[in-house]
Image (cartoon, rainbow, N blue to C red; front, side, top):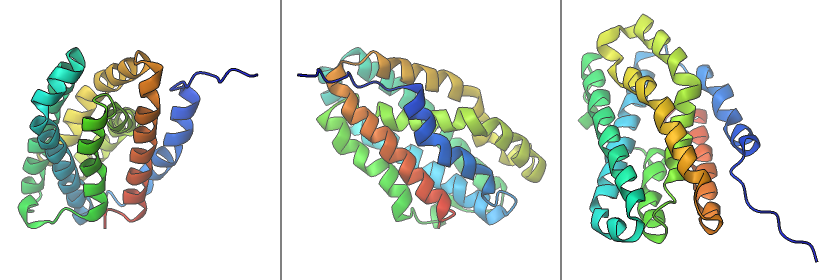
Length: 207
């Protein structure tokens, strides 16, 4: 009888899952100001809402996950700061983030995280790693582009992502690879679902 191979969050799995996102990222119409504002508004809603969802469950997760929850909470504070910068950039572009509705695909990125978190506190690591890894791969180039197109005054959000993404991606990947094997399926599933949803957002150009 063959022994099942251990489940591994491998470089090959990461590369295969994220390739469509990497390839499609600069096919998006970044030079259209309305598109860039929509992107910022989506980031504002996803990151601020995800932070609120996690904050609501702080006590339960502190009891269940201990030090892992402290890592999550540090990340939430980082995300909350990013959301504020996205809001500021939309204002600089002449838009009003509060007048733009969160669309179903964007909400689908963060809403399931509450259920996943309560079921297994480490599960959102898949969500966090997917986003931070995309940022590592593409946001330095995006920063150069949006500074050229819209100026420094409308580029605070993207710059903040560039400044922190490498650390956050490496830290989340390290946590994932040190998890008990029994927790990996939920994390990997969340990672893959998040990549698929982000790809869907890009395909529909955030509409």
